[in-house]
Image (cartoon, rainbow, N blue to C red; front, side):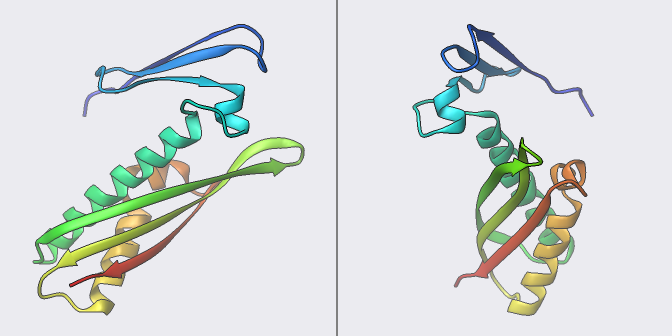
Length: 143
C-alpha cells in the first residue's frame, strides 16, 4: 500500500495564530485556529479529521465484511463523534462513537450487528487508535 501524507502549517502563537491543513492528494484543505479546535470558531481541527478518517475507514470495512458474508449493502451512512477532554491536565482524545445506518437486503439484525462490530474492531483506523481510544458503535439496520 502507498504511503499517505498530509501537511500542516501554523503561523503565530497558539491562541492568536492560525494554520492550514492539506491532504496530500489536494482533496481537502482547511484552515484551523485555537477557536476552531478548542472552542466553537470557524474552520476545522485535527479531531474532526480523525472523525472523518474513522467514519470513512469503518464504513468501507463494514461494506467489505458484508460483501464477504454474501450481502451487498445498498447504502451505509456513518457519523463519527470524537470526544476530547482533559486527562491529567492534557487535552486528550478519549473516545470515538460511530453511528451507522445501513440498508442491506436479506440480512437479519443480529448478523448486521455482528458484522458491524467486526468491522469496527478491524478497520485500520480503529486498530491504529487501539487501545488508547475507546471506539463504540451504534448500528441500525433500515429497510
